[in-house]
Image 1 (tube, one colour):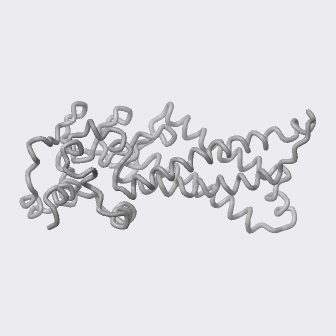
Image 2 (cartoon, rainbow, N blue to C red; image 1 turned 90 degrees about the vertical axis):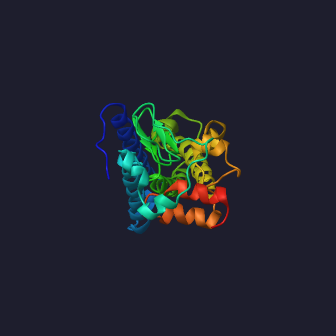
Image 3 (tube, helix red, strand yellow; image 1 turned 30 degrees about the vertical axis):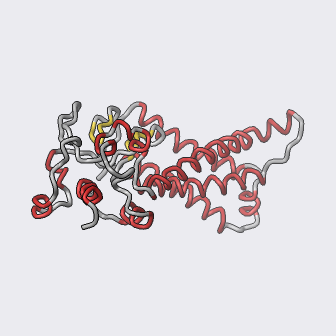
Length: 266
């Protein structure tokens, strides 16, 4: 489900991302890099693959940016994926763990949900609000966010190699004048490669532990984590955590997993 794109700052951020992607790609083709040399020799396979990867990363960016991250629309949605029998058998919340109504939108929050004041919605399995994406990262779009980071990292590493192949350093104003755009592109590629690599590694680590950025940073303020007997009641092992994250085709009832962990094996 896609959300209508708000105008203003969000549109500027998204336009800037698309513009930078196109501008850097164009700079790599217009200077004497390996891409331009292959194009001149009629070797079009690698340039085409590179363009397709750039296009794929841009499409993934907009998909994550406009996608519903898991907004809680009504009190009934907290029971998504739970049938009537499961609801009856599910233990009641311990007295020291309370699932409260949101003080902003007044909806009853499912476990692991949090209200985002920028999006003005409660988001299921809230991770963070990403200023680069201009959207929340939550249960629905988090896997796509990681896929975007992975594809973007491949593009950036390849672009780094291409940009480096076109740089030959000379201490002259003439050299700088003819290579300024390639040099700026190279610097941008280096900066974004470091940022994207750090984001991808940190998110893969958190996913493998079945925790979120919000839970990792604010454990002491989250009642269901603060009063849990285990350090992470949602951790079911790396393989199952990754399977649930990338392959689950429905919203997960985290209360059920929490209570199973709390009461031992069933």
